[in-house]
Amino acid sequence: MQRVTTRLPIIPRSKKDPTRQMRFVRSAESILEEKLRNIRDYIIELYRNLPRATIEANHDASLLANRTYIFDLNEYDMRAIHNAVNSFVEDELDLRDASSWFFDEYIAESYRRGTTAEFVNIAAQSELYASNTLGRRMMSDAYRKRVALVRYRVFEEMQGFTATTRKNLGRVLSDAIANGSSIQDLMKEIQRQTGVEQSRARRIARSEITT
Image 1: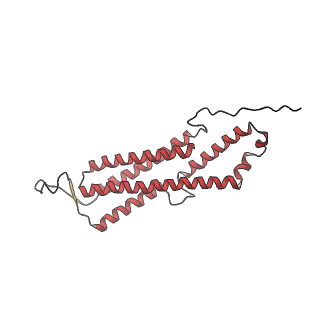
Image 2: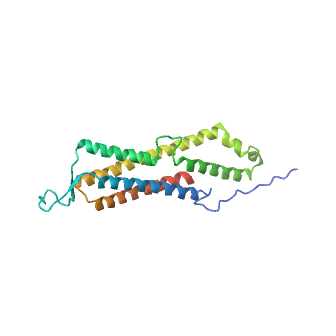
Image 3: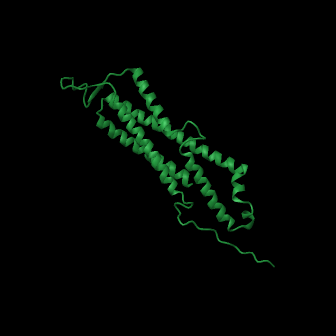
């Protein structure tokens, strides 16, 4: 009678990073943070170059309290400014095409690594499972469709992130123009808001790549 040997599963070395994805996470985080810095710098430079007049001491202080500048802008100017910001954010985050955006390479590689780790683990416990090779499983229609759906979900989540980033940073810029804020005050507020966006970007990178 043939004796059946039960093999134990392979226990990951790290519970936080069972498929060793953190290198990709850190790389993705670094790129996202760089892109947000570029957006921040673009908005600050745009604000710096807007036509404005410095508040003089003889202006009515009750009307111009806490204002540093008065901007000579009309409705069409404001629309053009927001269009420029929106376009820059979209170009920087590169989310116009789900099949070729900067974050996709990290997602694709994380799926390959995760699938390989799972295959090796289960194959070590089941000869029947191991008989269907990893390459055949990854080329199967069922696997490819599942991965495609998950990758598109990530793309949609990043589109939502982009829309929120555009809205929040656009609001900061509009408030600065309306309030006649100094460039230093705008820089502080933009820095604060991009920090919020960086936290959201970091959460997306960590949750999607490691999962």
